[in-house]
Image 1 (spheres, rainbow, N blue to C red):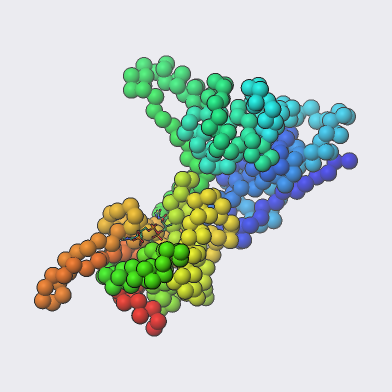
Image 2: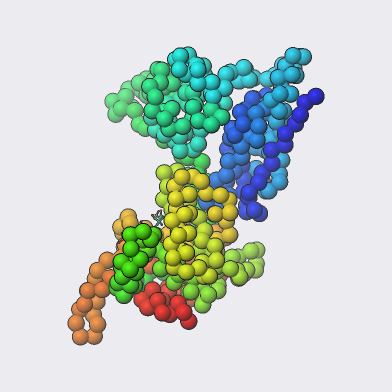
Length: 412
Ligand code: COA
């Protein structure tokens, strides 16, 4: 008797999501934890894995299909049932992939007898690394859990067959083209799943939402002195307070004073959020991720700093849970570490505004009688002009600047 396993979408929490990557087809066998379907939601990507080994009996979605929690994606026949069924005449259309040894069979790797395995398991970062090194992962035996290919497997010497066929094919094609051969082969770097997801989202937002960006700068000389003093007081063991937690705190206060910046536009209604959930952009190897500090207005500076550190670590390790990236009501993008004086951040829709921070620098500021050196932080606020007008945008930035200049205003 064939046991069927239904694999459904989960962890999407009502967010708009769609299938971005379909890794399996009917008849293919998969190992436990093999990635079956990639799903994009906002600026995040979720991978749906096989709960057990088996053969793909049905695929119910296609790339670009919209999906929501609970939708049936794939039906698997459990591995044991597949084996017993194979004694009797089975479906003749099953592809040969079924008979390929699992990647987990490291004995073949040890003996150097590699057999192509198109059903390999590897995280997005490993896939990216392999692409960069021109390696064909289907030729590499994985030594991780359930045969997953890990970084060490890429470091091992691999036979010539593991050089990516597409890489070699590209080089061969380029040799035929004398003009290109003269220039040498260009490097083609396929975008990661996350980069494609973010690309699609920002294109949609940039083309559908009329953005206006308000630029300003604020004096954070006192704030910086306070931050340095706090860090000295707290000692080496405590987590260091960077500028960002202070900005989150000030933003949370400004959002309470200007609720229209903590809202979404749904059809023709403005939905003012009762909670303040502040997202922040994190630059990772895979691309941009935006984890969310939930209830930022209720957290202390220390709690905000801990949350930023926890979420940034998870983002960089590609371990953000769906809950970590959902529910944001306003976003901050801090480019202070990268330099520049201003930029136009793209709104993280359906939010209505995003704050960009550039690098704070010392500037001569006229105090009425003399120029004095002050640490000035550039602020770039992009907002949705369908809902927020220019005066409101300027007032919000000016209020935020005043709070950052004197944090006591956050108490008001
Ligand atoms: N101006 C001047 N100094 C700044 C600054 C700014 N705008 N922002 C941070 N700093 C300072 C910090 O206070 C800290 O100073 P210290 O070493 O004296 O304590 C130092 O720079 C390092 O801070 P950082 O490690 O960057 O911490 P953070 O909490 O400010 O930022 C992240 C954390 C996760 C946001 C950051 O590491 C990151 O990934 N930024 C990229 C965001 C991004 O990609 N945006 C683009 C989206 S399109």
